[in-house]
Length: 165
Image (cartoon, rainbow, N blue to C red; front, side):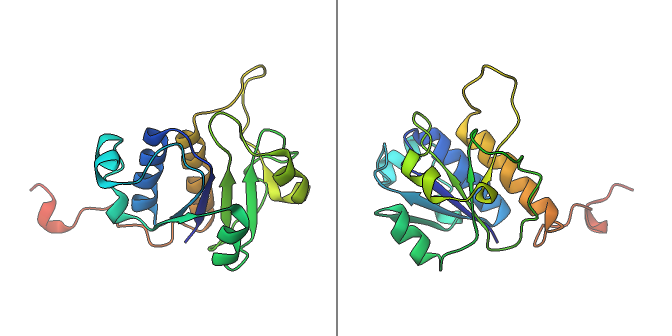
C-alpha cells in the first residue's frame, strides 16, 4: 500500500524493525545504497532482520533509480526541516516516504530537489536531534494507514470459536 524508502540506512536493528513493520502493515521497503550492513542470511538473523521473507524489500543503487523503479510515486521526505507536520497532507495508497540515514539525515541536495509540500516533520521537544528511525517510520506509516481507514487490516474481533463461554 505504501512505500518506505530508507536512504543509506546504517543501523541493522533499525532496518530489522522497519522490515517487521512492513510485514505487518503491507508497506514495501526500499533501501538506497550504500547500506551500513549486509543483507546476507547470517547478518539478517543476527540483526533481527528475519522478517525479510515476510516483507517486500528491494535494494537500489541510488535514489533516482529507486524512484524510477517505483514509477515516480508521490514522495514525502520526513525531515525536521519541514514547514508542515506529518498530519497535514492527505495520504493515499502508493505514496512513498523517504527517510535519511540515522547519523546524517538526508543530504542537502535531496532537500533542494523537493518542494516544501513534499516535506513533513514529526513534532519534538526543542533542542533534540531526532527520533529513532524505526520509531519515526512507524508513526508515519500508521498515520498514512489510518487515513486510508486501515485498508487490508486483519480483523480485530475474535471469531466465535475463540470466544470464551
